[in-house]
Image (tube, rainbow, N blue to C red; front, side, top):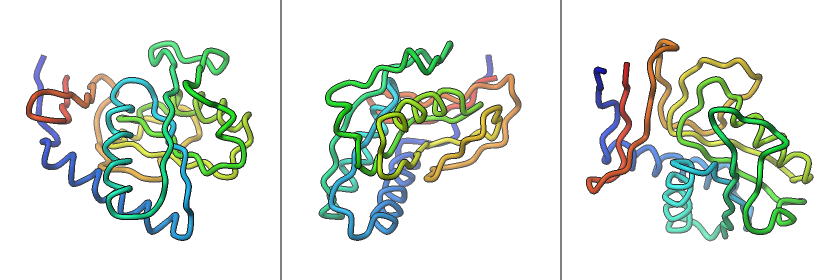
Length: 167
């Protein structure tokens, strides 16, 4: 299988920094956000954005993890870690590494909407534009034109994070 480096660690960190600055602008005047990271690489991305956002603003960010099987997502099987009651009336930000069909993001967002947030926003590092569900990412690191057979992976290593295209 052929692999191509799309984003180095420096590139990924620049995308994360830009997203944090965009969030600071969008949520000007807000003092509290709830980050809901999709388990896996979404958790890594969430923690990096949280650290960057808190270093450039006074916004307090609480975090939780959404557990879902990405291969067979099902809204009834989304489990939110920590205190899901914290979502009610809050501004929630759902974070994942890659959005492809939108199914995983859609199921997680649907389970959050059931808990009555004040506002819901989405963040991804990579947007692939292969939607089969009517959802979009509000904050995007980079948009890639890929074919459906290719895979995009955010990988963590001793050198940091990198994004690879496999296909």
